Amino acid sequence: MSETDAHTERDGATDVDAVVVGAGFSGLYMLHRLREQGFDVRVFEKGDDVGGTWYWNRYPGARCDSESHIYCYSFDEEIRQEWEWSERYPEQPEILSYLQFVADRLDLRRDIAFETEVTGATYDADAATWAVETADGERVTARFFIGAMGCLSEPFRPDFDGLDDFEGDWYHTARWPDEGVDLADEHVGVVGTGSTGIQFISETGGEADHLTVFQRTPNYAVPARNRPLEDDEYEEIRANYDEIWERARDSRLGMPFEHDHYSAASLSEEEIRETLEDRWQQGGFRFLHAFEPGHVLTNAEVNAVISEFIREKLRAKVDDPETAEKLVPTDHPYGAKRPPMDYNDYYRTYNRDDVSLVDVSDDGEPIERVTADGIRTTAGEYELDVLVYATGFDAMTGALLAIDIEGRDGLTLAEKWDAGPRTYLGLMTRGFPNLFTITGPQSPSVLTNMPLSIEQHVEWIADCIAYMDEHGHDAIEPTEAAETQWVTNTNMLADNMLFSEADSWYRGDNIPGKTSVFTPFPGGLDMYRDICDRVAGDDYDGFEFDQVADAPLAGQ
Ligand code: FAD
Ligand code: N01
Image (cartoon, rainbow, N blue to C red):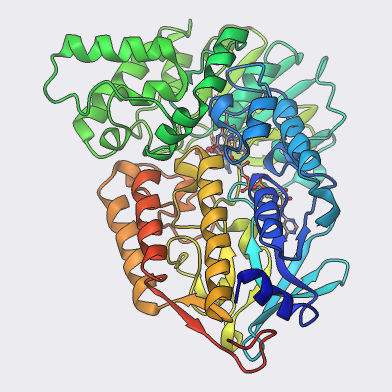
């Protein structure tokens, strides 16, 4: 029986074949793929339009740091040829327009329920189906429940005492108002100097009457070297797109850039500096390709050379030596926290009289509370009209665990993952059959150029569902052994890298009370793709299938 015939037999037994949560890069492509396979799909999205990350993050300066020509879908030749990016790193409105263009082109909106939050999902083991609930009280049954809710989509705001007393306005960057905020004439305070904070600070320094930056940990921001894309350059990209994508798929980071040397071990100090200098001029993630990117994060000596090179560069940009020292990271190696990019001369922003830096680390003056007039640290009070939280996300698991998910035998996902997520390939977790996660924990996701990782997951899931129908399987979940092995391997790979030398959202350290465990798969997209292909080619090795008497489709 073909998958389409099998699918037809199921019609009517559940409301839809698949529920997908989220309408960003992941949810949009998942919808398209499953529709192409003849499935009836319902997407639920909290926002009132498509875009995900690029719908919510409208703060001044928001843009991506993957280069535009690879920060997009590769699967559709027409879309790829028709869309034209304006800059090396596009701004948020342009990426949002791109995703809206894709949604229109593929007629996706008709299957998306906007302004609808999924709050719960319960698995019925007898029928091998999921019942999905929304905040509006709607209940939809489906064979497959697919999480496309994003690994950087649940905003985190530290719970400072006194916020209710604050007489000014406050905002989180990931919930920035669409109409913008007029910061001119205002005393603005921003907490956070991650990728978001750095973009926000560069953009608003000089615009606000005064900008006070509350920094807990400095970061290594390498120049992005943004610029418009020239017509002939774009023509060349288009002409070579197949090869570019192929190189990106076969790479560790999902980026098509060659590295100059594998390691720095055989090079003289002068050669190392020349290589780094050349890469510094290229900017962006090309800098990370001076040496093999994985090697940079496994070899402490190579990393130390690179970290020191960056520190020297940063110090040279800041006029006041005391401020410079505060801005230069010495507590963690380059890359152990997600490295941000500097688009707009971030470090020189601190040379302005109307921008000041407050070190709120334990060695400085930690924040005590928010007051009616601003922020009080252990050393004094800073008067603010506007307080901006650039404090990031409950990453990797936050959006998934915000939904009350109950699997087989009443086990909840929150209970199962209490000591950290346990998955097989980051795609599924035992006890929750037919629940797939796109860019789930223990998949490469945030350590790669994400649209490529997303495409790989979507295609793997769609193929897996087709395989199930071809073979009359009602339910799929990983075996205990395969899951344990995957968790062990992921942890082992991470333990051999330098990630443990920083507190980071990669390990959930930013969320009070969250178990600290490294969450993305750090072996690289190329290795991961090979493993996933082998698993699928080996009749889904490490998964077990079930046929269920009351299922919408009994096996043929
Ligand atoms: P998202 O885009 O996060 O979409 C998830 C959607 O699910 C959201 O719209 C959300 O509203 C919805 N949702 C969540 N929970 C529910 C629920 N319970 N009910 C209903 N809807 C729900 N990655 C890169 O590779 N390169 C970059 O340069 C880059 N830049 C970034 C810049 C910023 C500012 C941020 C925050 C992230 C960046 N990322 C980047 C990561 C980015 O998240 C991914 O590239 C990509 O956009 C993720 O797409 P997604 O569809 O998986 O998730
Ligand atoms: O969040 P973050 P983000 N008191 O968690 C500080 C992607 N992204 O939104 O480091 C004081 O990195 C916190 O301090 P510390 C990218 O993957 C990409 O910036 O924990 N400070 C940190 O400085 C990125 O990594 C792009 O000590 C507190 C900041 O808040 C990810 O999204 C652009 C605090 C949070 O930084 C998240 O980036 C933007 C407290 N209680 C985002 N709590 C591009 O591609 C937190 N902080 C360009």
